[in-house]
Image (cartoon, rainbow, N blue to C red; front, top):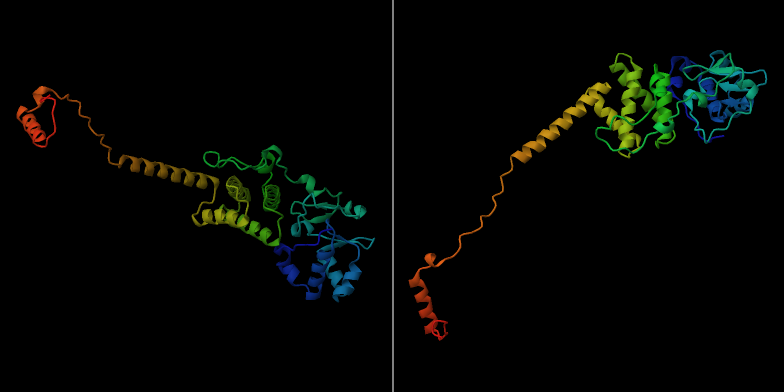
Length: 305
């Protein structure tokens, strides 16, 4: 079982949660801290005594459906998969399989009573051969990630969020924690709002930023959010907006290079003297004068010889 647990503000910032007594809120957080990788806890009464809570606090959590309880005494955090995402290589399945079989996971990532639970890891998108690579940017800048299943399966925020988390973790961004989870949700909300609530388009824009980050070999969230914030500030809210901006920038660069080339002064090649020296070009008086000067200096000449 992991030593670190996360809490999502999507749950803890709701009026329903904040309306509970502080002791019930504290108990909920401690139950999260002691849960296994599927959100199950078998020693909830020990936790109650340890944190100084009361049985009534547990009843409140059950009544408000923040946790589900079983006849065996085991409880499970209903919003577990909203709070925490456990990587497959670190995941250990719960020991309480009988209780788990009494639950299902809805589209928002919450446990619910009903049909047998489907392991979340079996429903997540797998990139396979389409895994992100460090491709050259240019015309291929917008053609890096995600298979058709991923793109066709993001009609709402929860699916978009789950797919982005999976892609980020599989491509070197590390495990998604609480702060990063908040950032992902914020980017999705901002771009969806700019697209009239279309989370599919918001997902595509953030996916585009991931492609650029990985293509540049910079798998850092600071770099990723700089890309999305730059687009948002420039009102580039859709893929078409981004592609049009990229094309305009490339065209301007091309025109600038052409202007610089046309504005250069033309190089003038030196002219070679090709006219042969002949007797007609030589002044006889000049030759005689030079010979006289040589004679005065005591230098013999061929003419004297």
